Amino acid sequence: MKVLIAPSVESAGKRAWPRKRAMQLDYWLLGVAFSLLAIGLVMVGSASVSIAEKQLGEPFYYFQRQCSYAFAGLILAWGVLHIKIQVWENINPKLLIFGMLLLVLVLVAGKEVNGSLRWISLGVVNVQPSEFMKLFVVFYLAGYLVRRGNEVCSSVKGFLKPMILLSLVGILLLLEPDFGAAFVIAMTAMGMMFIGGVKVRQFGILFLLMAVGFGIVAYTSPYRLERLTCFLNPWANPFDCGFQLTQSLIAFGRGEWLGVGLGGSIQKLFYLPEAHTDFLFAVLAEELGLIGGLLVISLFAILVWRAFVIGQNAFRAQQRFAGYVAYGLGLLIGLQAFINIGVNMGLLPTKGLTLPLMSYGGSSVVATCIGCAVLLRISHEYPSNSDGNTRGRLSRS
Image (cartoon, rainbow, N blue to C red):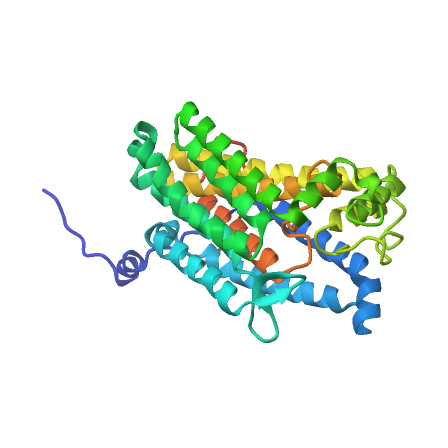
């Protein structure tokens, strides 16, 4: 005979209000992201102090603005950290459309800086939609690979449909012009499609077509063709088209092993254009030397590694959208860092790409912080206790 005992008020209350789940944070990813952000703030302050004092009369103008951008990025990242991945999966097509509308708005009413229409002025700040478009493309492709995964692997049609849509995004970016963003988006998209199971033959054909397309775009544009020719031999025109690259190489040479010391760069004193943006890594190499440069490269490598591990964990949990997003974000951040560092070292032609989390620029910092927050969210929703992760706990509402 069973005796039924009525639950107490206290126990009933506990069942009615389940205990909140603690949020799990990946310490590797979190620590690396904060380290890159902190190093970036220090280097932006060091690289921009001279130009800010000359142009604006405020030595720490760019440093203070970068601090405000980083703070805004962290606040938004905190909010994104509490958004379920399912939400991004539901709205990813709308995000892509929204991003394309922003790119059209840039062409219609954008703010021109250095001959390019890449920014929308909001008064106190300028927003660069292409930085957020990179995230939107990752979300869209992840959703497409989940919805049409079998079609992508089995037919050319399923493979080409998203590529045609993304080609429209590329055209809008080239009209700004923003060749660097278009190239990064294209390479990230190809990487995600390859991970999604596209046949090697189709992948090779698309890669060849895209290489020919980018080659034609570069050849038919005088300033891009000039960049390519100067890249091959920058010392032939060291005071003209090769000026940026030669000054960057001089910065690397002066840095040697341990650098000239923080704040001791000579190249940032009006020799190296865009020292606090596109060529921040060259100033870092001059002031902190080869050791400092290798440290930053190692941090980016760890970040990409963690993104791939998080993606693998999501796939093991049968969550393909989250897995594709993690892999896509890892590719996006890794490719942009690789291209920026390659440009600074003279390994790649000059492109207007920032170093993620480090270079001066509000849109880039905020967008990358959001991307890292999405990775942390995926890690929280689909953790793994078997891959050696070290995680901290932070209570959430």
